Image 1 (cartoon, helix red, strand yellow):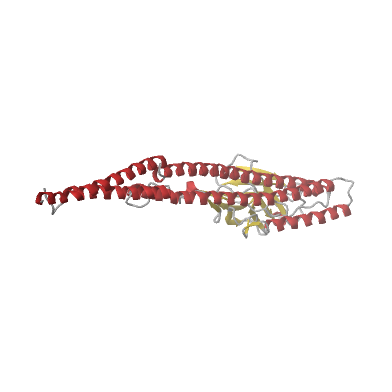
Image 2 (cartoon, helix red, strand yellow; image 1 turned 45 degrees about the vertical axis):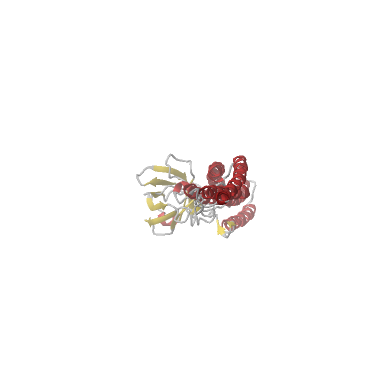
Length: 386
């Protein structure tokens, strides 16, 4: 029997300290609901859960981004739908002007009304915006570069309204013209020399100062044959039946709209949108003329082609809206699964915590009793002295 070192008391004290620490940890879990409250509880688990928290934050932001992108596309589609109504009205006016019952004065009045509608069309292209970003003026579409014109007069090539996703390639426009007839045809060729489509301009008189040819997506088998509008001055090719050419190349959009729809920096987490130009020029309507029956009849064709461009553009926007909707669904599913995985690591099993807490409380009480008994053992030495 010894009195300087109470080994029994030391064992009891050590056990009591362990019990007290366990109770403190269990009390933290009960108050926070987490089984990891400090790095010491589970260093690896805390690191994984922290990374998951960052990814969950990115996913929530990506869902918001995708919804904002849908709002932007809805805004663009609303502007295009207004253009559809305007062009439909232009088509109706051209049809009315094509009837021989209309006098020249009537046709002139109809032309004035059409010009007013074209002004509104251009106004829409430069005013429809989302968060101060003009959407329909071609700012976010493919561009034409490297143009070389073998004509002595004015000639331009512009992308049509449905060419927001035009394939990058080189094209050549051949203009055939005869001095004994009206302007015949305009043919679009790609870089390999394959004809992409031909538009007849026989209804445009040789005295016209300018003309427009349209190529609407879906009219040929070439993947890059989204609509193109070719504007030129017929007078500069007057008197020649030999084809003259305009060479140009289509480049991908340098400033597409990029939607970040994922938490990571890679193409799988990004969606790019290119919107074409929706002006009267890019719709091929800038030179529309309903004065004269043949001109009015040709105006019907121009309006129909413009409507095709607009509906093609709406189809492109609709496809991207579907993509974004599916993206949002995938993000929400990923969010749910990731939260479940994080919960497995971080959340405490409260029934187990309560059971352990009750056990440790009992151990604490018995530990206190054991320590008290151990502290009384050295006092037995006094009985030996008595």
